[in-house]
Length: 263
Image (cartoon, rainbow, N blue to C red; front, side):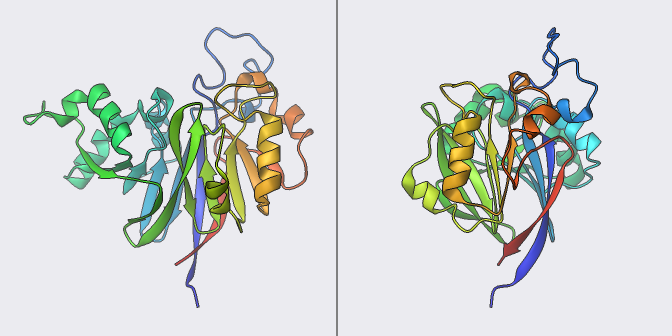
């Protein structure tokens, strides 16, 4: 019999690359006083017994760690190399100090190349005192292990860029997807919770819009689904929520979910 453990997921950010509100924008969404319309860049915190990690560390990483009162972090999983998913990695210095060691980063070899360009000073043989220090673990599509947990890396495509989604037992988190192969869809069956990107209602070359996200959800058939990586162009949280079918919701910053992880 499998050992089922409870996990908790917190949406640290549910916005797209510019966040919401967007700088200098006066649209109704960006001017909304509703906290659910105020979105930092997309990221989640995963908490399992004896393991706490985030997926992605964008420009808002420091603010997200402070807002969620994260006192200990064991690893970061990176989906891909775009700035809104990696730009906050300089701030892992706080966890370097806490751990007195390099910080574990799980990513593909291609993402590591981007980190070496963007954070070149972190890879110097004789680094500047106080520079962030990364312990890189290479990921490929398939199952990998962090501490005592097996996690599945799911391949999706963001236009022509490979992006990794992650499955933890009965929960899967996928962002920046536009196309997903039949093989990778088959690895997303039997989910309690699916989190998937939905940029807005209009067609987009590298992201699911609302129609595509709902079609994907209908094909995968999770028990519940949440939309994330949301643009200000999508509209107001309360208005968009009225368009969604049962068991599908818009995510928002600070939303917490519990899920089952079977070891």
